Amino acid sequence: MMHFIFGSNHEDDFIKIDDYDSRLWIRKVKSIKERIKGFDEKIENEIPEFVNFIQDRQINYKDVGERLYFHPRDFQTDAFRNVVKHSEPSIIKEIRTQLTEMFYVTGAEEIKMTVKDIKAEFGLRHEHNYLNKEIQNYLKPKRDLDNNGNVKVSTYEYMIPDPTNTEAILNRKGKGRYFIFERSEYCENN
Image 1 (cartoon, rainbow, N blue to C red):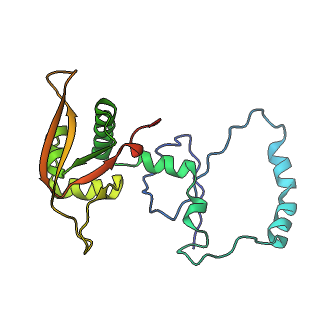
Image 2 (image 1 turned 180 degrees about the vertical axis):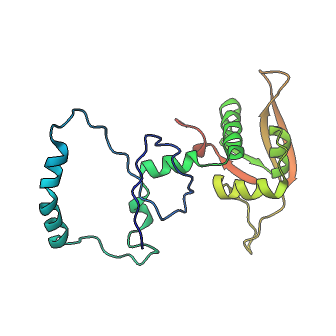
């Protein structure tokens, strides 16, 4: 087993990770406000006390039996979530931006769209299966399921800003296996 400590001023994008990653504990450390004279000597003099602390300390955290000793909620800090957000593929960032804009313009509480709709409305040329997988992995939208847990084919509607008239909203209808995107996931101050 090995442990690494990375230090970086690039707090958003120093590494690419997803929210399932359990290998990293990311901390944002505050900047030092003033220079400490003789810092190296002072820290070296503290080594014996630090070693004593490590040897004699009582561990109060219980092993939760997960992949690692700690439960994911304990090491998934705000800094961790920030890096995850900035690690998203550019296509997901584009879809997230487009959905956010749709929510603000239409005022809708939820948007139901299929991959085909997303490709057409947002002008995307990516492969259908790739988009489907990335949307599910990163955006984690809800789906309409039948009693057996399979995604239902259903009719749905969504509103979209009219590209030819900024004052108008178009209502689109369709039938298929749609994603359900919720306003609370995309808009601050719902």
